[in-house]
Amino acid sequence: GENVEQHPSTLSVQEGDSAVIKCTYSDSASNYFPWYKQELGKRPQLIIDIRSNVGEKKDQRIAVTLNKTAKHFSLHITETQPEDSAVYFCAATLYSGAGSYQLTFGKGTKLSVIP
Amino acid sequence: GAGVSQSPRYKVAKRGQDVALRCDPISGHVSLFWYQQALGQGPEFLTYFQNEAQLDKSGLPSDRFFAERPEGSVSTLKIQRTQQEDSAVYLCASSLSGRGRTGELFFGEGSRLTVL
Image 1 (spheres, each protein chain N blue to C red):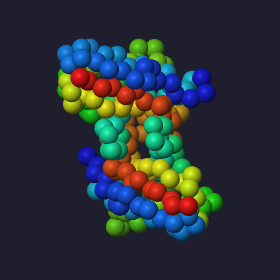
Image 2: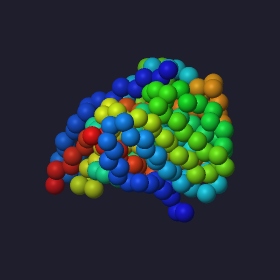
Image 3: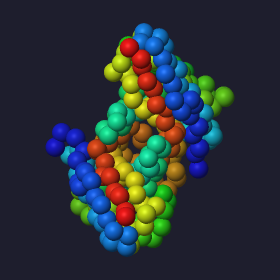
Image 4: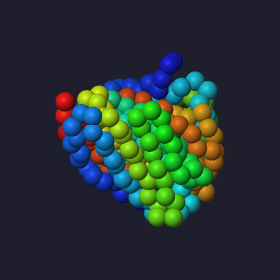
């Protein structure tokens, strides 16, 4: 099965600075890489995703890059704001062959943006 | 409904008790997933339904865990003879996409199970 490693586990940045979270995956057949934001006690919500045929995707202050050869992908948040404080999860999607696609999540990064 | 709804939000069970957790996905969503999220960890896959068919149950940790979606909409995750290690948040997610096609997962708020 797939294995996803995520770093760092905690990250503190000053408001206005950038934050970068990195993930690696093990199975080269994985083809879809979403990022979810989870605020304390709330549901995970998709913030951005990227497919394996694309190297980079940007949405306002958030960008994701994918290096298929190295099997790693990263989340970049620019001009961070206090409301960006949350736990961020990366995930890799692998078609299981048993009739489903499975998302394997990283262990999460707790981002704290200091005003 | 507007989003994925789960109940109960909180459940405290005594060890050995059976529990049932309900998920009401977004109307029309073909795919339904159950995940287990331990404290401070990422969600871990339990099982997947496409409509009423349970296509993948490889993540269920033991035969005490059972899930069903008999009419292709509401799903129930049942845990028999609960153990302390079952304490976690159980997340349900649904997706419009069907087999083999990836798409955004919409998560519910989760059911937090505490086994004493």
